[in-house]
Image (cartoon, rainbow, N blue to C red; front, side):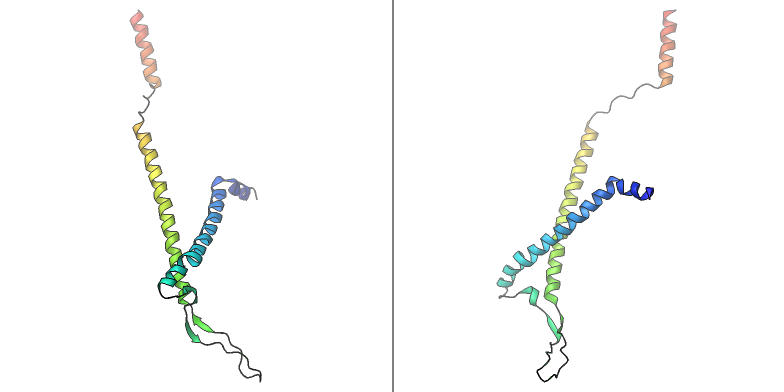
Length: 142
């Protein structure tokens, strides 16, 4: 149990959890953006098509009749419109993540250049050099 507590107490685990939560809600926002804002105008431009309702019906829904005939089976369909929406959502999320990673890499490069540009402090003399300097100074005094 101590090892688990030590693992959880590490900053990386907490940061990862926060990142996962943020990513989940970012995905929900992008999905809403695609489904509720982006796709309706695109559907309107394409002749009033609602992409979320596009489907290829394999078996139509059968309702149970008043006489009891029919088994009341649900519709079986390939909902390719929802698939199109999901692809567009993925592309937007992938582009956003690409931009974040690109900004992060640029920031790292700028920080590395600043560190390179800063002149390095001269290295302190080693213990041997200090001792030899003291011996030299003592010999000069004699």
